Amino acid sequence: MTCIKIPKDHPRAESLRIREKLIEHFNEGVVASAGLIAHGRGEAFDYLLGEKTTAPALNAIEAAAAMLLTAKHPVISINGNTAALTAKEIVKLAEVVNAKIEVNLFYRTPERELAIKKLLEKAGANEVLGVGKNASARIQELGSERRHVDPRGILIADVVLVPLEDGDRTEALVKMGKKVIAVDLNPLSRTAQNATITIVDNVVRAMPKLVETTEKLKARGLEKCHEILRNFDNKRNLAESINLIKNRLLEAAEKGELLTVEAGKL
Ligand code: PTJ
Image (cartoon, rainbow, N blue to C red; front, side):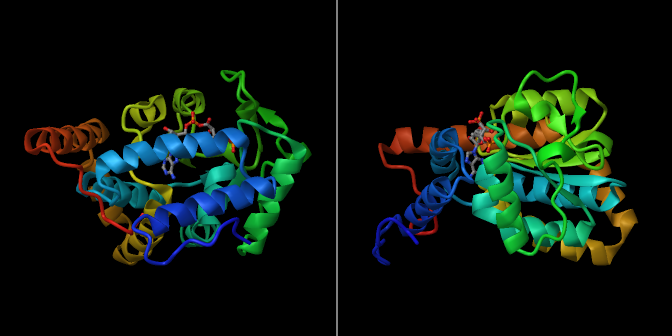
């Protein structure tokens, strides 16, 4: 049930629908109150990026698909916002790459863990790790609630996908020798800067695209995946996203015009 009726012809209809979805899941105890604020920060960066999946984001998505397909123990780490926005895609991706799904929260409460688990199960997940006593292992480098991890999941993972994250954990996971794939609209965030592969895109667009790319790449075999990974340079790709924002701002400033966005898409 949404809180307001959004007119279909509203130029920001899709963006408003996403906000309503988050509010709805906030009311159901899935999204943290800070998750609503975090979404606002994401929206601001999305506006600067043109609210579309850019060429560097597509490169990173392809590399991420290759990394997930070549992983031994891939894990998809889930927080409130990601579950609220992309539960179906998370389940599908886990199926395609044979990954574990683990709940890992910054604002961890037993109620939120269970609400997120329920939402993922409703979307088709058979197993959801990291809930309650199952998060019995610790990441020593971390002081936050994110330190609680499942010994069958993040603790033994070689590749962890962290859609929408705060910076500390990405750094800690990389220090532990894990490869981290982040989805973050802010190319300047610590998560974006420290991840092994950074997808600078909205989870709402990136997750379906990642599923589609992974399915296609799976059919092309592991050698193709290794080749993609050999040719991918995350720092260079991140710099391209930052340049893209810079050029869009310069263009708008020179013309004295508003930034163009994919009107109505997001
Ligand atoms: O559910 P919890 O308890 O684990 O808490 C989750 C939040 C998001 C509240 C927590 O991880 C947090 O505080 O994160 P930050 O530090 O605000 O970072 C969130 C990052 O995600 C920011 O860099 C935002 O730009 C980015 N972001 C927000 N919405 C999206 C996004 N990136 C991609 N897609 C989005 N829809």
